[in-house]
Image 1 (cartoon, rainbow, N blue to C red):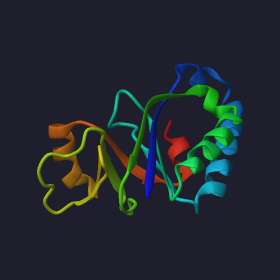
Image 2 (tube, rainbow, N blue to C red; image 1 turned 135 degrees about the vertical axis):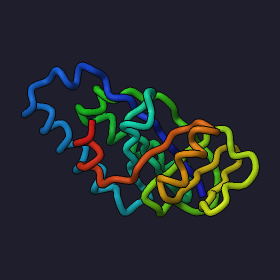
Image 3 (tube, rainbow, N blue to C red; image 1 turned 120 degrees about the vertical axis):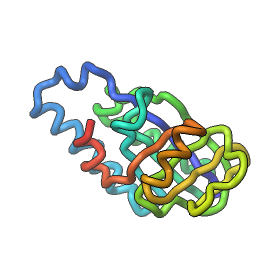
Image 4 (cartoon, helix red, strand yellow; image 1 turned 135 degrees about the horizontal axis):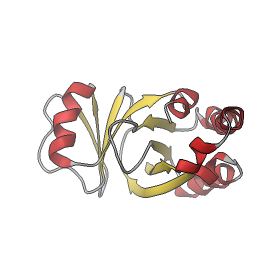
Length: 158
């Protein structure tokens, strides 16, 4: 199985748009992500946990040629003009995140994460579990910590 994770930062210019325009842009992107939702896509809000990025998009596919298909559609949305990729991580691993909170460790995890579910790729690690259990690991290891949200809910937090 292949994984693609992209951390996005929202540009300040977005907040300067009129509220009605912001809502329209969020609706457009949310609708796209909802359409792709059954195809191994998950969105995590990093708001409040990362100064570098605001959203983490997880995509899983049997074939890595599927990743550009979503990227192509994302680039057609006007909202993506206000979301800057801060990191793109590609890997091979087994499983997909299922929990409410996710910690992406781009350089892997040394040792064990007791009481947490760890999905190991060849280079990176995804750790999931309750936020209260992930937070100390995040402080110690770094990475990207996020809460799984429905697309519109995640976009509304921006």
